[in-house]
Length: 270
Length: 282
Image (cartoon, rainbow over all chains, first blue to last red):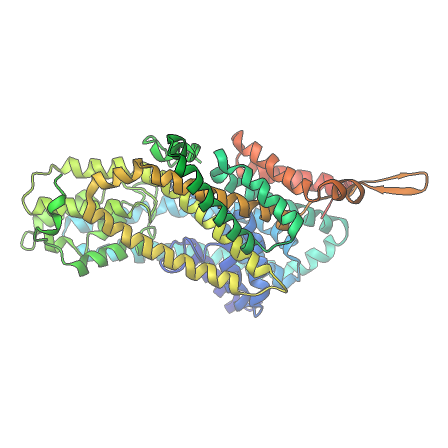
């Protein structure tokens, strides 16, 4: 891998991780999207999107709340996809390799959350002096230069040297170990779904999980078609329960309504 | 707070400056995210385009406003943007002579950020993003693979983010704190959430079938004939029962407060043992 390619991958990771506008946070941070960009840089956009999308299955419902970051999905997406393309891995194996990378990546996030406090004090001083325009410097430019340094360097190094070794590593692992990787990669999406279920598998909505499961098992419908049926089911259900006009309809939200109404909600709780 | 006459009153802040403030909030909200103040400085930054209209000739008062708004603040960026709109309208009322104590503005901000963060994180990251991602990943992996799922997800998410955040900001500015509390307490929200949960559960059910891959590799040989547990038992009774079981099992562990890191370790251990002994195959 060329050095410039590795640096470009580092930049993708930085843009995804640093919560920058237009890119980071809800878009480029997701492996589906950063996998596509990684694939474009390496000349295989479709493979990139497919591998990134597979890695993303693990991170479907991951919630970063109150400044916590359970795992660094942008790093997992960029490096996992890059290794898959350079090492000709299948998507499941790439996923099994990407997940531990994501756990390692949280170091970058916690480092950044800690050091960024320094820039707040600069901002305080400038505001006290009435130099409000300098907030662009303390809120955007300086912390982002710092983020760029701690994101681009490690990611570029890992992309360059990792890609060189991944091929020989896979050859070494041929046979049984690689099968184990695929078993792990096949199981991991269950975690992403289970995390999402924490938020939606509630009250009267529960039965629809099994309906969706049965429809998919029996019919071979695409997920989009199933989503549309789900949407219709949701509308019909709300209309039917709404007509009865009992408070039960309002309570149907179950646990979610409890969160909504609870002023003691603590965003630090994971 | 008498907010009814808002439209009749002459306002200090032109609409353009207000829009710029909303864009600054959504765009730079987490560029300097940190443990000490979280989004505090982003909150101050949001006031940058409007503060000069509040006290045009009084730099001291401008500094007061900015210092007050730099305090600790943390919320879900899109759902919480109405708090910023509300804070600006309160500062505006104050600048126009209303008797609003400084603590009132700080208190209303801190009392709203908890509930809005709770709702926002749940709806945004727990419902909206997973459903949209699941559908778009499926598009990307359909056929021989394509890039459209990723493109559709990115474009849709950007549009939703900015449109929702800016309109929510304006809602907070125009309607005031009572309207926000009303919205939080009304049944509409839980109804919406319940509907979204139904659709989400349907999609997740399909996702289990399509993307969780676990099969039993046990083959029992007796008197010359092989009995393949997966083919002869599971596939015959209910295919995909193992992926469903695995998912619900992990869900159960999470309900018992297992962290995701612990579950990842468990999956690795189960994968190594099961894969090595051929109990599980991909």
